[in-house]
Length: 192
Image (cartoon, helix red, strand yellow):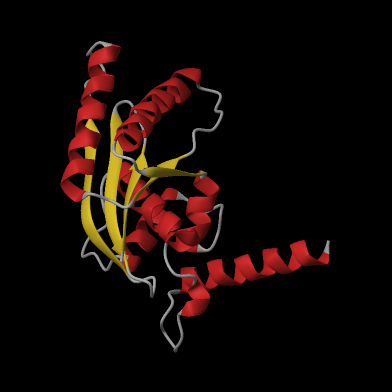
């Protein structure tokens, strides 16, 4: 069993999701929440609140690894800065506990859970709900994104490879699509 804590970093809303993933790739929800900060607070207070919230969840749930969204360039520098600041405190909290942090791009996460790197937020949320067998979609989107990050990491190498799972119905359609895409990419690399 692999326990992954996924983080969708943000200065106002920092999504955090914890999943347990079996070697068969079956995933179970452990925890999901959003660490929120008031935009009216001083920056250092907001960063501290995120740091304390994430640290408490790391201590409570004791994940094996942390999956964090890779900060990417946007036109809105203010948004990128807030995301980078939140990411920094997550990196520090994980490192202080000796945990490895895996960074994943949004398109990697979308491809892992939906089978398509261009999926929209609604598609990602719907697949996270289905994969984790939830009665309702995780809300807000930051929470669903955090769970998707955790699933992405577990399925991309944190847990047993899909080829180790046998039998009809053992993989979801998204897992089969991801497995097939990995095989195709590996075949193309060998041809070069």
